[in-house]
Length: 198
Length: 367
Image (cartoon, rainbow over all chains, first blue to last red):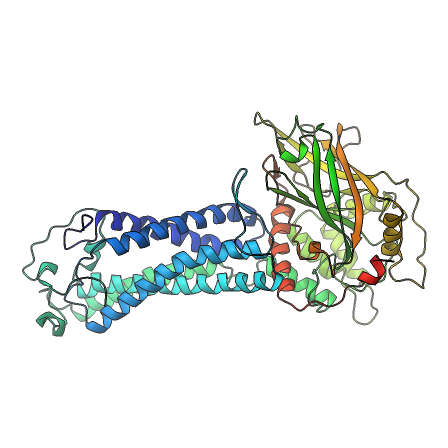
């Protein structure tokens, strides 16, 4: 693939997408959980939440395509087969949630007969018929998925920090925005297990 | 399998000392725990006494009892359909498509304030009109208005306190006078607002009531100019003063009179826009604006169909006051965002519950 990485790091566009979406998703989770508990800031936060959610959906689809088109740097040799399976599984879960959550939000507003306002006059069409029970179900699903996304993010962050600070295998370098050249004799270049797929 | 898979530390890093390891584990705990704690704080879990939309709706449920399937406030109502004909008069103040000359369909709902879906109609219960305008741009304008001149409270917290202060005491079934007077002592703005509300002439029925937006909004013109406004639906049906007592025989006498009146002929209201002058309070719904403010008749609302909640799509509409078209926006009034957020909680709860028959039934609206 022309989009291949330098074999120790993710491809540059993958790294940019990762950090951009990490910031957006974390912002989104905090906006979401704050706004439903807020009386005074609710309106302002909802006005950001809707277009930001759709921006995440678009980027998540781009990111999925990129993920399918690029080869991944190998896992570091410090990751056990079980860890690799968990990492690959959590990656699938994160991709699923990134795409599903905005769709559930969009569907929920549609089922609740609520306008899906982006900015100014720009609004999206409903993707589901107006159905009260469906609205209530999707509204609660949206919250449940948000908690799941937060827990998955917390687990992902803990695992990366564990590798970076305890195992000290420079796992984070794979996702660094800038190029990392290391000379350790047993660096990731020696790890021949390829790809992120289990 | 590579050799390295079996080696826990293949990176050549020297093992960490016990203290160093603990410090590093603690650092991970601080980072992840800090983010998790911030998340919990943002969601209100760490501040159980701060006021949230869910707690306001909880209080409605405590005061009114569980009424599954119904709105938590303005629970008793009837729905309508009709159209709004804009005359273009407000187009200079707001670029909203609703104000271009022309006709747009509307649906809406008349209701009585309070969370009791089967309460008996009473002359002095606050009446409301909620309207959803369907704009040709695909946008919507939703507005809920009441037949009172000002709102009794200024802030969401005062609203929450008022709910408790006016809750019927279990022994008498009436609000506890001591709690009521304590509430007014703590909220002089509410005491003044109640005086204004009591001085306002109440009409005999829904059909000749004038309904007011109470909250201020901003109109944004095509050139970006911002004007603070309030609006009213002023009835074209002649005013008659309210009767002192209600008939004992008909618990729905106000709704039944409205239904009969619409069956006779379509009812009309004028959308009157009141324009604020500099200095008029735009963030305090307890204060009226001086009566000499400029008013614009923006068009006529005609209601020609009345329908029970059970068959009307308006039952399942959240009349969120901040569902606004481009050209209309909220003001700094803290009640607007609070209404938006609490309506959403009420809406989510009732939409997930099985619907009970409405007090104003299809048999009644078809009479």
